Amino acid sequence: YFLCDCVCISSLLRNLLIVWALVSYVLGIRRAESLNAIRLGWVPLGFWFAQQGSIYVFVILIFYYAWKMDQLVHLPGVVENQDDKDVDASLLGEPESQGNPS
Image: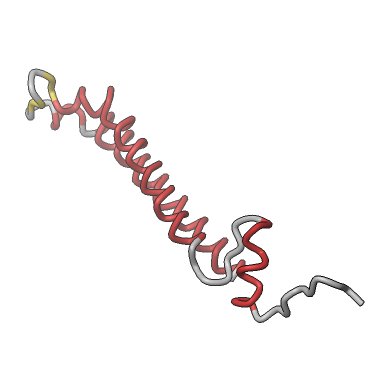
């Protein structure tokens, strides 16, 4: 599970950073002039993406990342902390510890 989890986490981080970079750089800087033809309320859309849009997208990505990590932690066999070790030991096929080690 560990290797798969590391690959899943690193690809998730990579994809979220790509989305954030595209929104902040491409929409906020490179395409700002073409987006300025569209107005969001009283503000041109290109200006909005450059000022607030990338921040809003970043906050949304943080919540998405937390949701995906929560799903990953609740997979069978994943031990989140020491208190969960006794519960998850049976899922891993490890023998349960006995009260008296004799």
